[in-house]
Structures are given as C-alpha cells and as structure tokens.
Length: 160
Image (cartoon, rainbow, N blue to C red; front, side, top):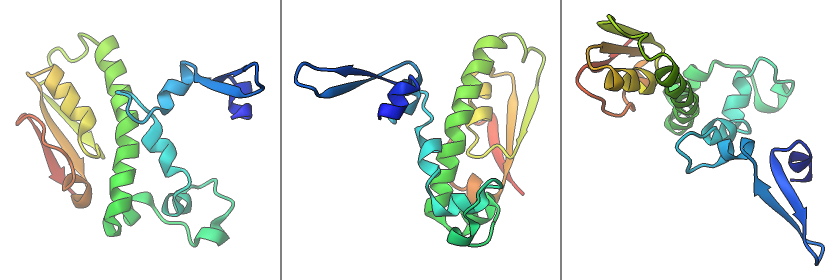
C-alpha cells in the first residue's frame, strides 16, 4: 500500500496514534469491483496460472507450463472462460462508453455493424441499444457466445 500511495494510486494519511489510513484517488476508483466502470476483473486475471501461460512477456513459463492461447483454455475450462470474458468485457464497457459519448453522429447511416471476436457482445449490444437503426452481429467462438447475456433482437451472436 505504501508503494501505491507513493505512486498516487491511493492517498495516505498518518493519524495521531501512528496508524496510516489509506484512501481512494481518482485512479484507485478504477479498482473498485462494484463500480459501474471498473478494471477489477482484468486485474484479477493477472495472477491466474492459466492466464500467465498466455502472456508473451511471461518469464516464468517453466513454472506454469507451456504457453497456450487464452481462447484455447477458455474452451476447456468454463471457470477460466467466465473470468476471461469478464476481464475483456470490463475494458469493452469503458471503451464503448467513451465511443458513445464522443462519437455522437458517427453511427448515422450505419445499418449493419459486425464485431469479430466481440466476446460476450457487450460492445455491439451497447451500440445497438444506443442506435436502434443498427443491426448488430457478434461473431465469436461457440463457448464464448454460449455465455453471452441477452441483448435486443437487433443484436445477435454468431459462432465460428
């Protein structure tokens, strides 16, 4: 915590009795698990051994085994698939909110939008919800599409 406070991720304050109290900065609010926009699911993936196998920068391959692709592990490990999809969806939610806020008229005239590798269709679902004239197609692997939540009928999922 001291290091993160030093890097201004958290605030720190020494009390009269010598106890250090830590608080949230604007940056730390991205770590809150129950926040609308959060990076918590992505950060929770970092120590996962299955995730570590997938990282090209991982120097500890001997410890976790051979490198594999994250989507290969997702197909055979449902619990990993759920964590992986949540990690990808949290960043998609942040990006789609920024896109919808700052790209107001950018979808004018668009009738069909396809998201290849769109995960649990969060991105395409939010765009179609905000722009009902668009039909959206989310294209992803069967085990990913199978766990995707329902969205309006104008947004559908396709499997590869």
